[in-house]
Image (cartoon, rainbow, N blue to C red; front, side, top):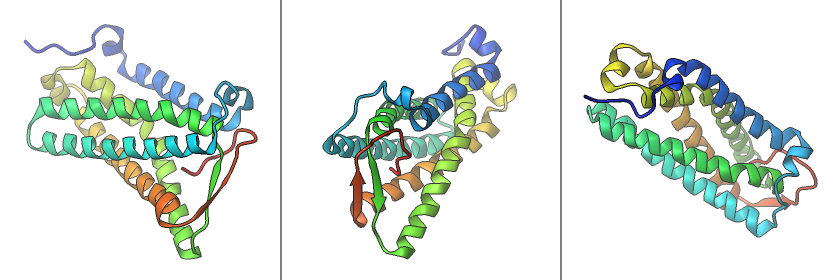
Length: 206
């Protein structure tokens, strides 16, 4: 008989777990942007180190786009185990992203887009949508993952909103990642940019 990966209190209170984990993520990210004392916990980075992390983050996000797309395809094909493996891999990749993003923001500088105005406005629109979707997707992604890890396939289909929440989570997450990667390409490869070393915690545009 199939058993869930995680049982106990996490299974009994998936919404509470989702809220707690979401708050941890929000506090960590907001901390590096808004709290100099929190950002100071991370080392200052040189420009080559910033560039390395920027490219590594884009590579991880690109790989996540692939695993999410495979997970979406496999669930539509009825391949539940493959779907679960793809989505779990996607979540692990986003944790790896976070492990690079926090020191990148806290210890890195700011890159400024130097392309023509039409491209600059397109870049800002894509970046803005990417950021908003990233913020909004956190709780629904975590909730879908928590449900997936704590319930059997039958329970997910008949006793939880996993299917509906999963569609919202995957769609918003995938669109956010795609827009983020396109913004990265515009800023780092298609057009010129200038770099300003960090003096204090500052918003970093990829």
